[in-house]
Length: 532
Image 1 (cartoon, rainbow, N blue to C red):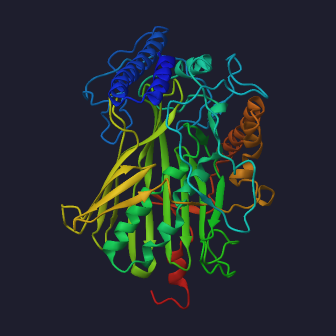
Image 2: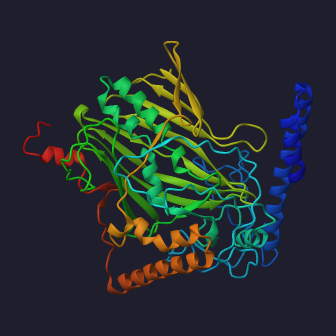
Image 3: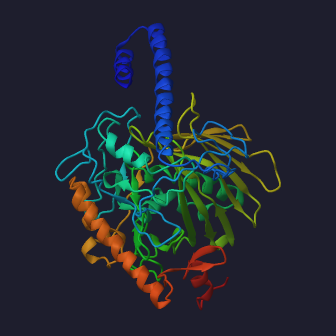
């Protein structure tokens, strides 16, 4: 049926008669909905099959599904009753994990030796054309003194292929999970890994640093709030640099990633900053991230521009669950943006992520309601990332509203696609393109060459894994990865035996939050010339 739909798409493209095209489209949409229903049936049959291997444990409450209101059904199509319990099974759980919050496991993916279709050295997965729209890559702007890194400067455009080409691997994956299960003990195949660490992906929040750095330049709180929302809505598309959903490396405890951006047209003097990236200047936007906890997995990150007097201090705790045909990642945490010259702090939250269509070619979507606000000025905004309904609807839809203090009617309403074009309608009647991710150039981040990095910096730490993944040497990538993770297990065991605590490098815990040790605001206030 999938092949027939592809043939129908070709026929639609070649059809010149509009009415005939419309009839074909109706058939195509109906067939696609039927395919999705069949996929769901396959998942449920697989889970039912596993349930029969052991006794069903009746009377146990089903753990809440991954959403803010915790009562979303496993197809992502609606609500389920609070007292509705799904059967729990005694499915044997592998000892290796990728995001354990229960014990000292440091695994997140491996090569399934028993799966005959798993790619081996020198081989690539059988691929089939993706049914998703091809991603239009925006222009990337690099600075004159940048250098080319072949492991990271090329986009990963390979296709994971269909269920047929990875059937045994998918079956192995599904055999480990049940709906609502926290993915603390699920082994993923190495070949679905993206060739970079999650810490590096967080740096892509600043793929458009010019939008971020414009916030402190605007004269009124209203304008600064609107600009903050503009930057925020631009901050997610660059993190997905592949046409298919792949999983970044889970950072190892103590791992760090640092980089900076040079702004075109800026003075770019050579006066160095005392901030998080010592080799950057005061005219650069600097960024550092650190994996500060493994149980739960928490990444902390910090960015600042010294001369603009703006910084972002944030952390994200990821919690994953299996949702049927999807894998959901709950992003718990927040970011605090300090606009120092205006004595303003803006608090922002982050959307959840979902890997959809895991039986065929997976794709990423965002979902959930996020808030942005400044306690001092009272300006605030809500941003809602809408997940695609089971039947109909558009992918990647986002809406946002910006409010003045103590007002319920928005001054700006925004809608569009978070990885496409977003339009704004102002209360004054003005309309505009608010953000166009297809046309805005991405500023390339500057990272030290791998041979100049310290042992626990992301690119050096994962260099062998990345090299082997890029060259399709899956077994070698798996072996290098397991050695890294085994070392972490050994270190964790040694700390436990000696009663030692993990010492972080750049961040510390304050209450329930993680913050950077030496934020720009603190350094400016402690400066002898400070007037703050």
